[in-house]
Length: 320
Image (cartoon, rainbow, N blue to C red):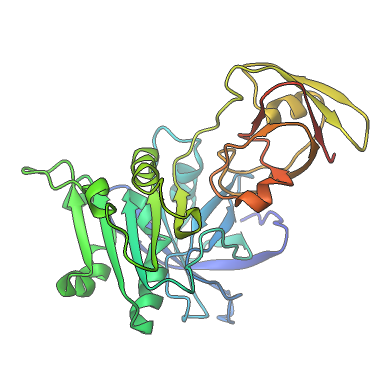
């Protein structure tokens, strides 16, 4: 098997595989010699490089206290960009898989008095380590896990003890009767020191953001799965590259990243959905329109993600 280089990579081997649902496979990764792996915190993810050169991000879903194993879960997406299907076809027990060092854009808030966790589908993965840590700490928390049916609910066996305690609740919208989550009702009355965490598809994220729009943004933590690239919304503008002096027009139907690459400027990228931050670029002047899903306001004051960000018009100067 060919091993492709990954910046600051860790070589792992697939120790075990477990099918969670018809579409989700759970993988356990280890150092080939069973040495400890670089530590991670709840909410972290790793980049995984496939043999065909694809790089994809997967949340670490195991217990951070287990230092010699990484765990990821991959959901097959028939209408995706091919990464999940390629990974499920490629990996077997014993496969060698290069991965990045863990990174965390979705951490637990250390000062929270109550944690409300909301997951949709495969968005459960970054929340699983949070449950492990919060439960060990004796913290106040609750998890609401939204899936279509019980059969499409990954990690049900892992969650069973917490379900029996009533701190984990499942919600299904394709059962008879349906039991969907009332997001607005759940989040209508925030408690003192309450923090909300949501990971899932766009509809769930939108509902959570709408229900928490009057809260302190620092208490609402979002990670979105299944994002799609978005253009600049029909506004044409110019890019100016400060280092080279090059000017590049961005057409209304182009992303900034597409325009840069079309002009021969190589910018590294991976998810191209405003989630992974691989393409994060410093901007120096202009009026950027931020559409990423992870950067804080202070970070956006200096950086943007050209895969999804745009400009309200005129000229945008990049530190390239």
